[in-house]
Every structure is written in C-alpha cells, then in structure tokens.
Length: 411
Image 1 (cartoon, rainbow, N blue to C red):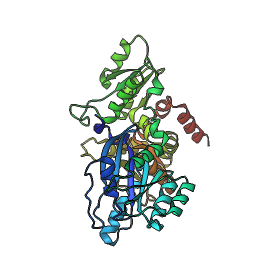
Image 2 (cartoon, helix red, strand yellow):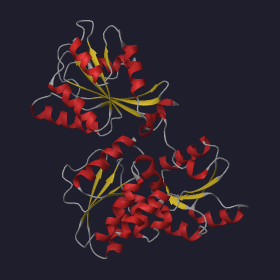
Image 3 (tube, rainbow, N blue to C red):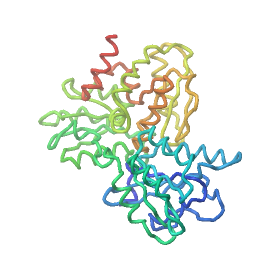
Image 4 (cartoon, rainbow, N blue to C red):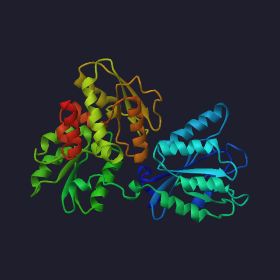
C-alpha cells in the first residue's frame, strides 16, 4: 500500500514560513485531511508534523509542517531549532507567506533552500483576503521561483499549488537510482546473505534487505537469499556463478572466505552508501582510518533509534574492530535519529549507518556538514571492510570508488 512506503523513499516536502500565515491550513488543504491543528493563535505548531501520502504522479511523499521561523522566547527558539533541522531532509521547500508580508524572513528561507540547492515553491496564502504584490511576484518569476496565490480556506488555487509541486520535484527523485540491480542486470542472479541473529527482527527482514530484493525483482533480475552458514553449499549447487554476492557487513569475513574470488562481493551497507549518500567521497574518507591514533575521538551516527543489544554493531562490534586495527584505545560517542553535534571539531572520524530510514537529501546534508567541518565521514560497511582487511574486494563492484581509494593511497 502507498501509505506503507518507507519514509526514506518518500519525497520530503516541507512547509516553512512565519507564524500564523496558514502553513497548517495549507497542509490540511493539500492532503484533504486535518493533519495539523489550526488556530488563530500564533505558534500553534511546535514540533514538525509529518503526513505521508500519495501525490500522483510522483508517488509517495512526506509532507512536513514546521513551527514559525519567526518564533520568539526560549520555547520559541527551541521550535526554530527543530524547524532548522528539517532543512537537512527537505527535497522540496514550500515557503508560505501572506500578501504584503514578503520580507527578510521569507528571503532568508529562500536563501537557505538555494544554498542547499533545494527546489522551492512560494505560496501566497489567504489570497481570498488580498492578492500578492505584483512586484514580488515579478521578482520571484525573474528568479525562476514558482509562486502561487492560494486560499486554504476556500480551496482556490490548491490545484495550481499541487501542479507547482509536481513541476518542481527534483529529477533525481523522479529518476530514482537503483540499489543494486544495475550491478546485476536483467536475467542475472544476485545472492543475498542474510544472517538471522539476535539483531534480526523477529519474523521479518530488515529494510535494506527487503528493498534490495524488490529492486532486483523490479529490474527482472534473479534473487537467492541464504544465511551465511548455507552460502558455500548454495554456491556449489549453482550451474553458473552469480553476478554479485551481497552480505550483511557483520558477516564479511565468513562470506568473503566462502565466495569464490572471481565473484564480486559487497555489503548492504556499502550499497546504501551509494544509494543514500556519496560512495566515492565516503570511500576516500575511509582512508582517514590510517591516521587515527590511540585516544582519538570517533562519532558513531545511527539514523534510526533502537534499543541496543549485547553485540550491537555500532556500539560494540565496530568499536572493537576499529580498536583492534588501530592497536590502541579510542573514544566513541553515539548519536541517534536527527540528533547530530553542532561542533564536530573534537572528532577525527564520523562513522554513519546506511541511513535506510532516511531520504537521500538528509544523508547528503549530513555529509556536507562533515565536509564543511573538515571531518571525514565513512559508513558502517566501509569501515568494517577496511578494519577487516577486505576493503578493496568489497569495492570491486564499484570501479570509480575503487580507483578513488587507490588514488588516495598513491598520494
């Protein structure tokens, strides 16, 4: 069902603007549901409100209603901070204003979206009371920013707003990249190695595994799913070798040992570094592991919140493997969800999960923040493969990334 599409695969459309300009009313009008509380009292919306829905012909989207960017006071500042976090995951920004109120706040929002190369649509709400100023409309048109007069109260202009959203949708969402099907090809076989251990959710597979299976089926490829203990036997039964073997990163060593050297091998996490982030850049940053010294501070970032178990990959296994590689004690900090330190300067490396629960925009925003701070950022699967000494083999399915790593080593 469309409403069950993973959040990370939805186009994130966020509403920004001053308090009481009708952001919540506009969201209710476009979704045809009472998603957000509407009140004449300014500052009604506090935390961002999310509404997943189907916006044809785009498909699954996530609308996000935010607090007024002009909120005041101590509580207001917290609301503004939450709103600013939404910029990181916005694929398409909607700036909501009233006639006669376009000014510094709106220009700041537009400048923020443009700095992030995020598509924007301007809506002049309450058009039943007054039309937008012609000079403002002309200026936005000259800047190639679509602007639409709308009345959320009467419904006038809502269909025009919907069309503006469709027209402004980023091309990389419309032409969604493959996870691994392009590495396999139609009519070819991929073997997916899925350990069933304490971290495996009872009765189901984790999201990257499910999405990889669907990606292969959507692109007319074959898929075989096995546990790591059955991999060797399964490969021996095949008449022809698979085009690709993909493993959970935690089973890298055993799977590498059981996979013939002529069969390409990688992990789900590395696939998602490409699908959600910047694989080449994160591969280059992984080389920073060589410069880590005893006592250095490392940040481990998880996109989703979960209760860690005894052998948690981010809190136990990666720190253990990296500590063994460095040969000395390291300091590890862990953050979850949208929390991320404003000051990254204490860290020598950021190790991020595959971000399967996020959209690509938010992961790229986090990568950009690390680059701006001069702190290298890598990925669970990449750092595990590096620590275990199988980094180049795990990158063989990605020639550009492998060459980028070798180029770093030649310097």
